[in-house]
Length: 235
Image 1 (cartoon, one colour):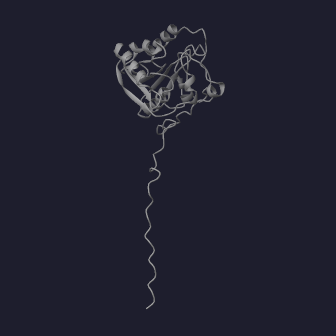
Image 2 (cartoon, rainbow, N blue to C red):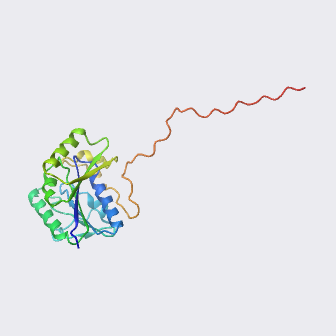
Image 3 (cartoon, rainbow, N blue to C red):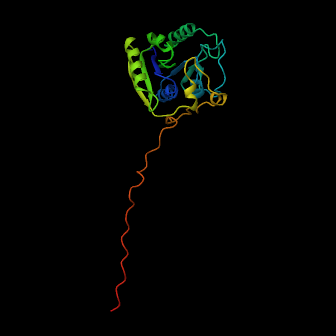
């Protein structure tokens, strides 16, 4: 069998919709008959498990952190747990473990999706480029700035990254996105505990916040009814 294609999904900054894009892509590939492995490569702010696991808050244990776990979507597996929730995590060690998993699992799946950290926030994503076949960059209307987009393009070009294309996302992924920045900053507990809804099979759901069709502009004149005809005068 051919080794899995490794597709990195990243963004310039936090809150641009890369994680929901990964979850939707995984479902689409699986519905097309492919075996898919999703690897959470954003250990500082792990979220993809909230879309894919039945029990979204169940953490991986050190013994099974590198083993693919079944998800609620048939044919989609997940690896997550690398250094998550620890203030003493060494990023270089985490990236090295992620690289080992990619190498070990390429022969077991058709597609491997990497949900990485935002490209301008850390070096984590760039460290995984040597293991990546294609890169998708997610941008969001009203969120991604021209400066961030240009800086991301420059970094990807510098690494000769195999960019497949750009995903334009018009959703507002979460209220807590503004808390995401790497240090990272923490969202309030009520926002961190409320995970996004997960795909449940069938057609890929639209991203949350996708605007409804625009109704006709207000102020357009309504049709004018015909004037009533007066009765004829008596003869």
